[in-house]
Length: 502
Ligand SMILES: [Zn+2]
Image 1: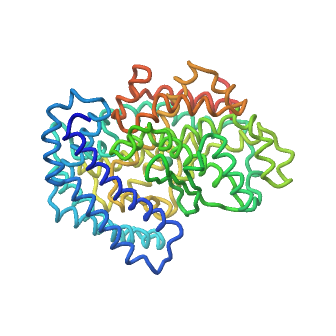
Image 2: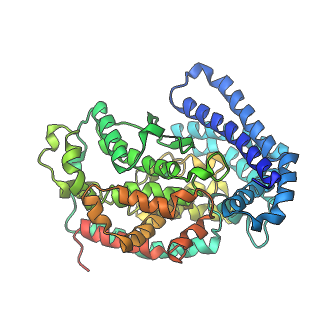
Image 3: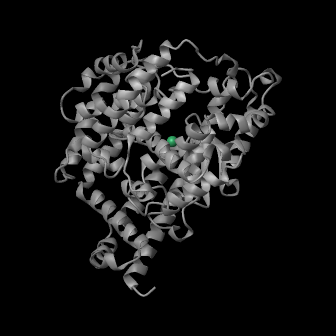
């Protein structure tokens, strides 16, 4: 490489990468098999690695390299431009806020997560309210240091999780969804032909579920020579890089679909990480670009593929070899309908594909009001319940199943929820583009998942975080986020499942 500064910048990225990899492995270990007795020292160790990364990312060395390289950015290859863009963004974000506020935030976050857990267990919002108020106030204080021209505080938060998404963009997106989903949910509720789903809840031994999960993960494209399937209460995907991307799931004997779809979902995340181009390895752009795009990949595999009729037509006999005899008389149509039952429910993570986004819209509208000072923390339970009544026609019987159900607000993750809805919408949008190039249903029906992975790798995965999310999407078909693909997809699918006439 000719440019010495660029080489030095890459070396610095590599050092950060090594710390990050170590921290990732330790965190995976802590969530899965690490002994409970070691938790105190693990916390100290994690803090050490976090601090070392912080020091490198905000170092004079970083500043000098950015100062030297940013002016000549446009003369460099696109991937280097992206690395500099991301490093600068991180540098600015980390150096703008005074260190003591960051430390206070970290402490408060830790405390809030513990208190939230207790409050949820006791179904007592008043336990959680005081620290939530503190955390929100501190978040607002920190945002004062990160003011951006023409952006409200909540928009800065939204941008942290999905670059380029503004309040007007989300408002328009959610309006488009509401217009179609709310009446569709009502139609489905009143449909004459209600699918039967009880047969799904039969005992399937955990060992069979493990084997089934491994089979399906590999079938759709997870390379287990660079992967691993672990076990945790809340499934996740985590990895150091494309050579080590791990997932977890949980097993319920009476509900095999929980582990089955948990694995397919996380495999979608893992395939994304595993398919990033080799040339980006060990840099700050060697993983998925944003929460929204990442979630589009997991939801694509879980819902668009895994809950399609073609999928069940292809997989039914193979899946049944892992299930008890009692499933023997069920056919592809039975599975397809049972696994697509749509019904308003209280808990977001258990919601079906049709009603899921309504849970997100509720959270988005509440967060927006909170950060625009239109409501107070004490009003949250009442506002929450009213929104559930308005959008889903149900009222939570208690706060544990209502406003206290999600971990996000206790983690200080405000502005995160909307990316889940973006993921669902992008997944449908990508399906539409893919269908223009080949017969996706025919591929799935033939068990050929390679064509799908190839398309996703070519258009999305290989780039890692080279292009910001909106640009990445626009590069595929010249168009940005368009909710219509998603609402059309839902309309068509649920008309089919519920035999609704136009
Ligand atoms: Zn996910």
